[in-house]
Each structure stands twice: as structure tokens, then as C-alpha cells.
Image (cartoon, rainbow, N blue to C red; front, top):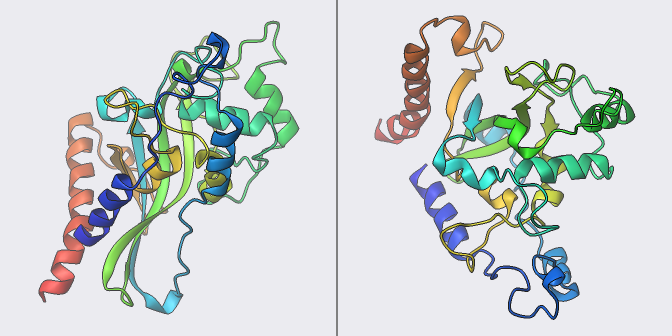
Length: 275
């Protein structure tokens, strides 16, 4: 696992280097925050890092892991930018990027939030109406401020051919305000998206960095390299992948159980090569 994260750090060091978009070259204020044609071409020609082919016989161990990324945590703030209307294209939250991709039909496969196996799809046209909330008396679309967290599904696996543990992100689900009942203040699961469907879109959207505007990465780089904090809320098991809160009642003990599950994965690689 240490080798993998070393590669991640190297990738970040070689990441995109762009200042705040067009702030130095803008002829008019409305050009600030808008990609120039040259910048659009540069992003379109820079392909995201393809997943390597992994032969099933080379996987000697794997675990499906479900995690939740809490957007209230400071380290996760790059995913959460609540002011949707400040910039047209530069500063976008992950939610705004996902929402615009669905509304523009760049992502057409939207999966049932109750089924993490991506076998039950929502009707796309119906879901667009739900995203816009256009079926109600007033159009109140969900904003970035309404999204509180993301659930992700991924797999940790040991590839014996290269002799290391790696992670592959499989799906992502936003959690936020109930679109069917906007008066409900409790966040709900919205929908699952197959992550490979999102990669071409997330690769073109730069993440805002409040520490250094000249060092930028994309949402795809941020997520695939696990530059976020999360808690494990479920792991594949014989009990139909039941969540931690289904067998641990106390919230504090749920956090303890989440850390225990993390250590099971973290320690496996060390135990594997120490024997």
C-alpha cells in the first residue's frame, strides 16, 4: 500500500499547473473564470490515467468497501463549494459538476440509491425533472449547499503480478436534501452513479485549491488518488454487506468499528509479506 500511495504523491507533483483561469489575460471582467479555447484544447487532449487491465487470476485478495465522505470536514472542502453562481466554469463543486453532466445528458445511467450493485436504473427524463424539482409548484433545484456527503463504493485488491495492494473506485452517490420532500431536513441517499461514466467529465473539471491557485488537480485525480477523509460504513460480508449501524447501535462505537475495518485492510498487506 505504501508503494501505491507513493505513486499517488508523484502524480500530484506532476498535476496540472494553472493559475486562476484567465485572471491575468482577461480583457473584460466577464472573461475571468472562463476557459480560453487554448485551455479547453489542453484539457481535452490530456487524457486521464486509464485503469490498467487486471486479470482475475492475478487477484489474490480483495474487499469491497463502502465509505462516506463527510463534506463538513475541512479536508473534504475541495469537494464542497456552496456558491453555485459565482463562476461559470472554474470553481465548481463536485455536485454542480455531476448535476450539469446529468442535465446535459453526458451521464445517462442513474442507478437506484437502494441498490449499490448498479442493476436498477432510474428513468433519465423523469430524474431530470426531479433534479430540477419542476414537478412541484416552485422550481427549486438542489444546490451544492444541499449536499452533505458522498457515499462511495470501491474495491481494495492485491495484484500478485505487481506485488502490491491497490484501490479502484467503482461508484459514487451524493447524499442531501430530499427532492421529494424539501421540508424534510434529514439528508437522504439520492442515486448511485457508475464511476467510469463520470471519469471523462470529472477529468475536465479542476478542483479549487484555497492554498495555492497555481497548483490544480481535477476531481478525477482527487477521487482516484483518495485525497479525502472518509469513514467505512459497510464492507462485503456474509450478511448481505450489512452496514455498521445495523449491528452497532452506539454512534461512537460505530466510529470505532469503522477504524477497526480500516485496520483490517491496512494490515493485510503488511501481514501478507511478513509471513
